[in-house]
Image (cartoon, rainbow, N blue to C red):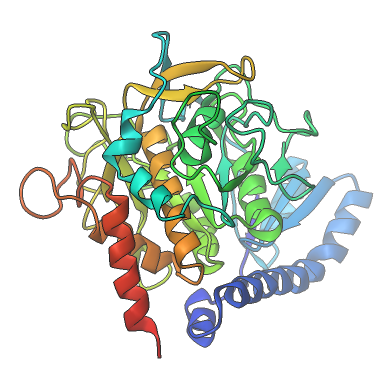
Length: 420
C-alpha cells in the first residue's frame, strides 16, 4: 500500500463545518476526501498504466479515507513507485497469525436475560421510548449472521450494508468464530425468542468481514475502513479487536481520524491482555485523535460481581491517553447470539462484548439527540459513568461503569449548552 503526500487537512475542514448539521458535516468530509484522492491518484494514473503495460504493475486501486493506493506489482514496480515524488510511504501486506478478536465464547448454557442489560440501565431508556430506532451500528469483524433471530430483522440491507473484501460471500455471514454476530447481538440484538441481550433493539446494523478468520490483515482492514466511510456510513462503528503487539501502533490512526471527522463514532474494545498494568493495545489506546487531540473511546470489561473482568487490558496508555480504558461495561457470563442456527446462543466473555454494550448505548443517545457529535457522545458516555475504584479515572475502570441514563442526562446538558 502506498500513501500519497496530499491529504485532507481535517482540523481545518472541521472548523469550517463546525456549525453545520451532522449530515452535512459527514457529506462534506466524505466529498472532500474523495475529491483529494481522485485528483491526486489521477496524476499517478499515467505512470501506473505504463508500468502495467511493461509488466511491472499488475493491478491497482485507490482509497479515499486515506489517500492511498493498493498496488500489486513486481519488486521493480514497487521500487519505481517508491521513487515517485507523490508517494511518501509504502507498506507491504501483512497478516498477523495470532488472534486479534477480543472475546471468547464459553460452552456453558447462557442465561435467557443478560445481567448486563439491567446493570447499565438500558430498560429505563426503553421505557422512555428510546431503543435506537433510526441509528445504524456497523462492525468490522469476522462477519455477521443476518439469519440469526436477534439480527435478522434489523439488517439494513442493500449494497451499502455488507462487504466481504475477499469476495466470497454476497450475503452477510459469519464464520465458525461467531465473534461479529455475538458482539452485534449485545449492541443491537432485538431481544426476541425469549432472550434479552441487546442494548439498542431498534437500531439497524451493517458489517464488513475484515477479520474473516480472526486475524488482522492490514489490506482487508483498509478496504473495510474505506468502505465504511465512503459507502456504508454507519453512525456508530464497533472495533472489537486489537493489534496483537504491545505498545502504541499508530498505523490505523489516519483511518480513525477520517471516521471521526465524518461523524462516525468508533467504539474500541480495550483488549483481553490483563490483568497486569500497561497491557494496552492499539487502536484502543490512541490519543491525539481528531478533533482536538482526543482519546479513543476504549471499553474495558466488568465482571458480574462488579469487579474488573480478570483479563481486562489495563492502562496506562502507551499512546499517552489520560485514561485507558475510558470506561467499562459488562464482559462476562453474557448471552450472545451464535451463527450456528437462527436460535443458537453461547455464553460469552471479553471486552469485545463490552464494546458492543457501549455501541448500543451510543445508539440510544443518538436517537434522542441525532445532531450530537462524536465528541459530545464520548463526553456524555465518559462523564455519565459511575466511578469505580479510587476517585477519578484509573487504569482498571477508567472513568467507571457505563450508566446509560446518566450519560443521557449528561448529553441533554451538553446539547442544551451548545444551542446558539
